[in-house]
Image (cartoon, rainbow, N blue to C red; front, side, top):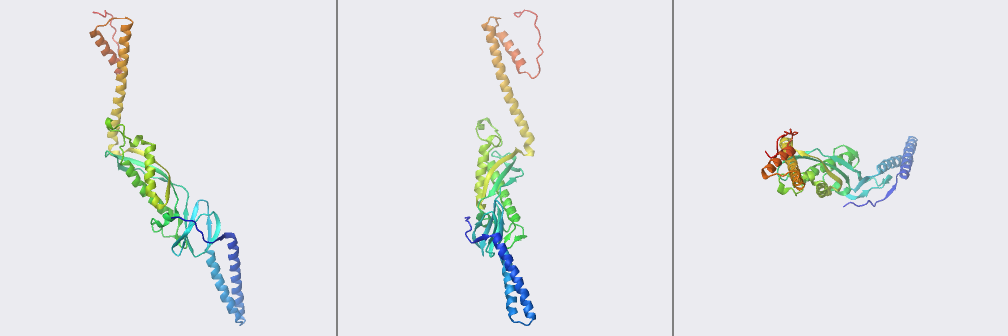
Length: 320
């Protein structure tokens, strides 16, 4: 598990001054030693070797500087052993023999391209997601998954892969696991209601927040291995696959037409009933069963027809 680095850490500007001073001193000793050797003075040999040793020591010290911006971290290792994670923002110096690897803790987006999956009833659908994630556990990110060998071979610093390479490896890991989680969730539900008896079951189209919540849970389970935290995950694209899109569109249109017709007939019947009751209650005209049937038929044709009715005016007696 991730732990805070507890080793010695010094102010970077102070150590920069010390390193520069030692470098200047080593150069001075080296020059003086060469001059003394040219004058056949044996003490110059000690100054020469001392200057060279001090210069090498200064160069080694220069490898210990760290500069961290907000939401960045350095993972430190001591000859292969995990020593801790350093997250303090600023300019610092640590023992140069620590191996360091830089990681970004900032939030990142993944806008996954729609993939083809089969829903619960076997229909092929195209589904995509947008994911916001960030690194939470640097130890898991580096040592629980193979993020280092998946990174490019170019080295940003001594002892570690480049920041860009490691983060690209993590992005690839997130993409693969996101596709797997999306397929798992999509396979548990139908795209849309296909049967009235299953109309109460949740579907991908109307699941909304509940589907997104389950998707986040599946992603959390899969990405926790790499120390990654899911900030938000949502389905941003949902459609039938092209090979069945036209057929399903006709089915949806037919379903919509049937539903609309049911509403029209229901309204027409209530209007006809109201008209008959009104005529009977106010004694406007008395109709026998045959005339009522004819009136009901005519009203239903007028009210349920798609085109405007063309009335025929009867100028004769109603009872002839």
